[in-house]
Length: 414
Image (cartoon, rainbow, N blue to C red; front, top):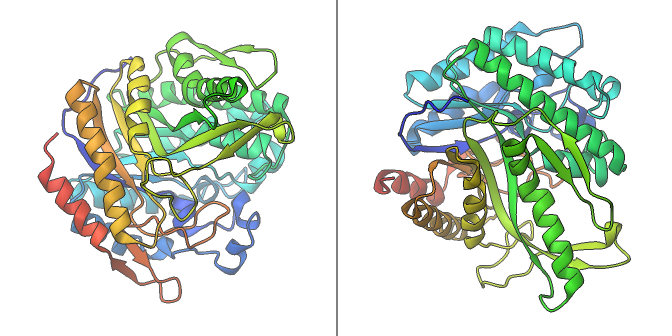
């Protein structure tokens, strides 16, 4: 396993291509009616150079962004070289300004041909995705940090259990097959990337949440919370350590799966946003009810998520079992209140600083997001951005939260 790294702390922001620019070739383009009236979202596809200038204003030294697979391969037999050239231009601009690019290969969306013909529960999906990885690593230059998949468990829950994301399936057995193929892709993509870029740093970005029983006195709430915490937060971490994935859904038999991902990790990307309270409810799917409650008094976000900074320390401590550097690849808040955004940022970075002083090897922090974007199934009003987007004029306006993040970058010495 590659342990090569520099000690420069990565202060960055994170985005995803589809959430900024859409794509007419993606499965999501026809999934949400909002995208029918606003297919170009923020018009980032055209305005990317102007948006990259905002990175210089902020003073970040790293930028996480994704490649939109459906633009690069709009048809199974077609590669769009112009799209690849555009992504290379983004990378070149970043490098010219001493900003480290971190590239995400898969951020939820798929080419329509892929999701219709080779969804993740079909074994053929693996070779189709790996051909895309080979194409990118053959052509894209100048990238050291790679994320193979963003939040594979969110994709699994939304696409295969809840059915609220493409491919819109509600089948636990197919979900397990899909997860095995996705993790197989990570393991093999890791090898492909390292065969072409020996000093590459390769990971996934894993969404982790603070999970707790709704009623601590209730043994069923405690049991469900323990099961959910292991499955959602910890099982993939253990799989990277042991090469075996243990899956337990509530009141189901444990399933053990061999996955070829042991030690195929150069750092670990942690996405953290919130705490979730878990309650036994026999009338809900799998008897699980999820709620957000303002226990700490920090409030809820505009999406109704609890603000719980201490949860970041909990997930970082557990992820540190991997014995690789950790990078917070997403952390942010949806709110129209920029003072609330500043308080969120300060509290979470204070927790991060304490974790580093404890000896947890955290090498970077990426705020989500640079500009306001499309939020999956939530439309355009979630307002995660450090820069506010006027969706009528497409003007980007700096907020006091952007100025505060610039101050944080200059004043915190990790």
